View 1 (cartoon, rainbow, N blue to C red):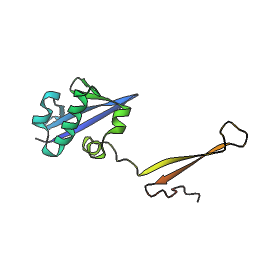
View 2: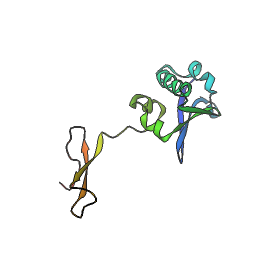
View 3: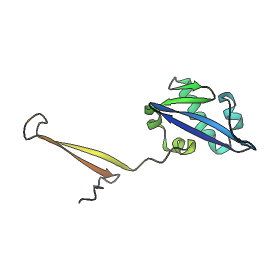
View 4: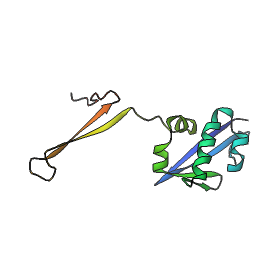
Length: 124
């Protein structure tokens, strides 16, 4: 049997469900059965999501788990990939304060930088 995660986003998070493929399409798996029915490659994600539930950071929602935006953003890249989220981008936003922000000559400079602290701005 083939299983895969399904992530349904909403305005403040998402519901993560494990589904099995059947002749009639995809069918949700009860949370208590995730460990028994998930394919081996998905077991690390199942264990991680179960731990979030035990810690109160995820809430059972029918046959899925409800995660806040914060919890989704904090997922390790390996777990995020296994549940079907897109990969994270290897860039950051750099903020540089010049003078005091509230003064007339103060300002904040922003720049997108890569993991090597190089600017990714196409205007440079």
